[in-house]
Image (cartoon, rainbow, N blue to C red; front, top):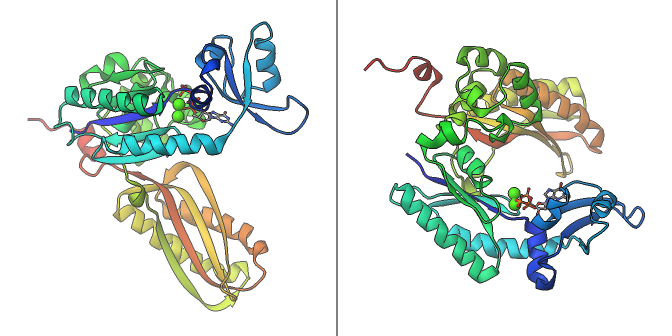
Length: 366
Ligand code: DGT
Ligand code: CA
Ligand code: CA
């Protein structure tokens, strides 16, 4: 069993501004990214919960937010990202102490694996996270919302349940009642494209996904991704909390027999790299969402090109196709011949090593 916590700082940029100037705390606070076009051109980065009551949201045009708040005193503040980054890094230093492993996923969000530190007890984990929240509040004056669950996907959802200043424990047995009624896009890894496909299949909630015919799901998403979705919806996926240094990538490098910029001449090398990289991913049971190629030129300068896929892969054909496309875009950027070529896979997703889909489909009879 695992106990995972997800920590998300509440209305982060706006809360930072409140700390820096407590007198604005009871008023709507809107942190803005100005585009430089016109006095009000730009978008809302975030707003405090008072402003949200008036309908203000992240990404909204500043002019729209001003209209919504026309009749009240409100504070529109230009974003000061460097300051928020400093506050974030101080908080993350506190957060790190509370887990066996720690993974920061954005300026205001992190995962902790707290299995061992809480002696495999959810109740201990809950108390531990309460202590962490207190330390953050006492030292930095900031509130956060914490979710605790058996996996990253569940912990992440739990962190949003009692926002702001929430602390929510979702045990495996709570999943059908608490998690399954929620819309499927709240599940880690279900983006808007996947959500649309699922909608067409009649999958609207996480529960719909958990109870969907696995074979049908495989025919749509492929075996690995379908397995991840089914397991994640049940809180059984094994995505690890990975410390930064383990947040690694796989790469393969090859030296060309003769330096060239000819697309057709480079293709066979790329083919070899794609084959090797795919087998490396398969061997390590990971899928990659990021694929990149790097060319080392005759003067030893490097040129690179990379892309993020809609869904993760370990397939040779897919990696080959993507890297060929990247190569096409890369060649015009080279002002010398290509001497060496490297293909890398990053943004990795770990597959369940112990539970194969076959085992899942045919539960043991005992
Ligand atoms: P929360 O977690 O719902 O209490 O509110 P936030 O503001 O912490 O939202 P979150 O966790 O999605 O985002 C963290 C920070 O990232 C947020 O304070 C500002 C920034 N951010 C979020 N959405 C946007 C956006 O659409 N545009 C820009 N420029 N920044 C954003
Ligand atoms: Ca947040
Ligand atoms: Ca966040």
